[in-house]
Length: 151
Image (cartoon, rainbow, N blue to C red; front, top):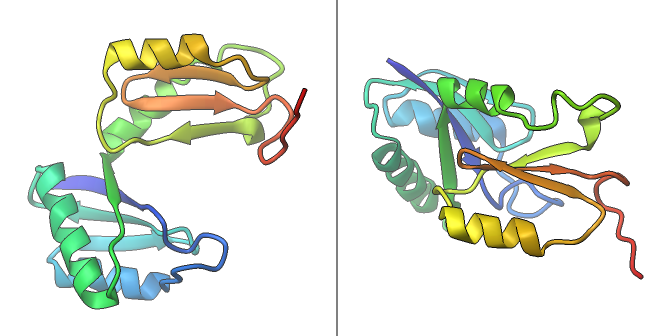
């Protein structure tokens, strides 16, 4: 069995599109997933599946979610092994003086093209530090997240 982490987009953010975690847990159990666990009110669900097809699993979850709730929600899936790699590949971990609370990892649905990623990284000139590794984008908010500094 493969352990997956489902990262729901656009639910439980700022009090909008609230979905209780026990409801998400039951939805996943109804799809036949095992050992389903949720994490706080995050919209993140950990489960085991006999299928190892992330795209197919995500489509099943998204379809059942929309049927049950009346609005769509995108689901990004990662395996437990992929999340271990996200931690291992963190380009900032070897840099002293970095506070973990200022590091965010963006999980895109697919793998961005190398040329597009390179162009994006080269064109950004803000205070944040941006790094790409694998499918993920690592952002270090040098001044803290949610703070904007305009010149």
